[in-house]
Image 1 (cartoon, rainbow, N blue to C red):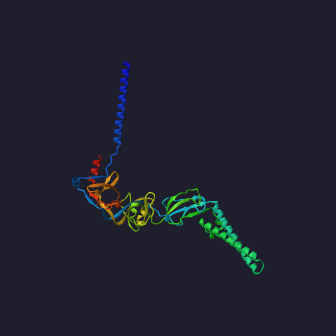
Image 2: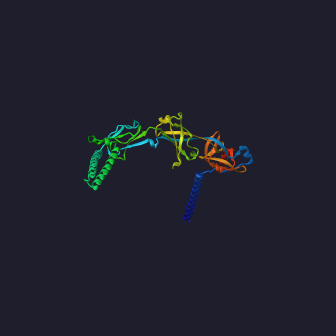
Image 3: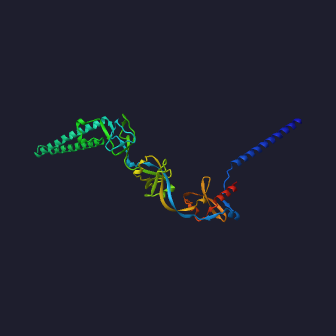
Length: 384
């Protein structure tokens, strides 16, 4: 009997401990849920007549306001494609001379590199031999014409001589054009002038961009030895994001300045606005550059301000817009003394007025222009 009483006491204690643990775990779980709970601010609030009067709330519709548009953009100085010249070998060969460094000035006709290869010898040899065969083919044709005049040859032999001359003429002219590719004048080429080396010349005035070859390197016709930047005006390529593109047009004035010297302003003009939005969400705006801007280097980052003129925009006073958790909002009148918080996209700010980009969503609604922050604080207090 004593043993049974002890067993009963032990079981009773175990049950009470288990119940306590369950109650404790439940309490902790409830506390954890309360800790992780996010307090959300309501999107609308109603005021009593007294609260409405004390808040000093004023309501207005959106206004069309003419605003001077100065669109700020970022970009780079770039060289137009027509001023970038790639120099390559017309035929494969070994580089025997190249003395240029990036930034060096060159004049049209200057030797940029010297290449060497047996193929150059073979091409000159082929041309000289073809020229010789053409010379004798013409002599044979003249002889056949004289024999034909005295009926000492047949028409077939004369036709064959004419055909041979035509074939040799084609061969010589084709080889002459090949020699032009390696800057050799076939009409002036003499047997004693045959060389294994050829020169590559600068086609334009400018400066060296990049040098990709070195002495002893074998280059193919597809290889780029160096690049030239031809003399001429560089361009400013700006990035206009989708919200700004509509305000930018050809002919507009542009103020350019570098990021390291923002006090130095340069005048420019928009010459072209891209008609395609890139995957990054911007269109390219091309601006001309005059001689004063040529101190800027290709690839240099710049800032710009496009003077886009006056446009009418749907606006509210800037104090009407509240900023909450990374977004902009205004309050609209839902019904008498009841206001709803509506997200807006803002644009240009000028003289205390702020552009509302998504104005159509507020059409026909009254917007709180005074007392917006009072409403926001009241909503936060309700949420807490």
